[in-house]
Length: 159
Image 1: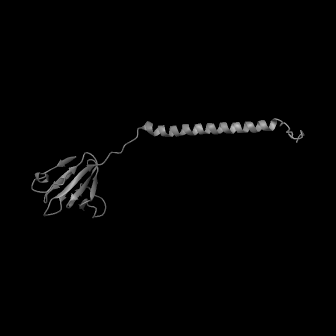
Image 2: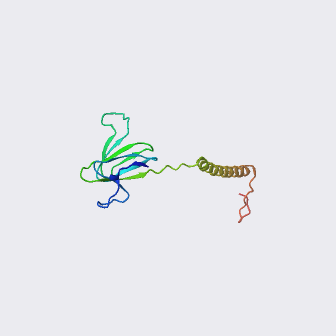
C-alpha cells in the first residue's frame, strides 16, 4: 500500500502503542492509495475519511465519513482516501488489512467434478439396465418353459 506519511504518523515512545496499527495525531492527515483492495479499521479514537470524487447521489453522499472504534471502510485497489484524526486531544489509531483474493479454480477443475458425477451416473444406469434385462429374461424364460408337475411325496399323485 502506498502511504503519503508525515512524521507525526510514526509511533513515538512517549505515548502508548497499539501493535499492528498506525498512529495519526490530531491536525494531520494522510492519503491512502492502496495497490490492492483492503479494509481500514479504527482501533482507537475517531477518523474523518474522505473518498476521492467525483461523488454522485444526494448531498450527504459527498464522500466524507466519520468512523469510530470498530468501524471499517473498504478500499478498492487504486482508490484514494484521505484520513484525518477527528479528536483534538488524542491520536487515533487504525489498521490496514488487505482483502484476501478469491481463489479461482482452474477451468479443468470445474469440468472434472461434473465429469466424475456423469461417470458414476452412467455406471449406475448400466447396472440398473443389466438388472432389468436379467429380470425380464428370467420372466420370459419362466413363461416359455413348461413347468414340471409336482407330485405328492406321500401318495405319488400329480397335483
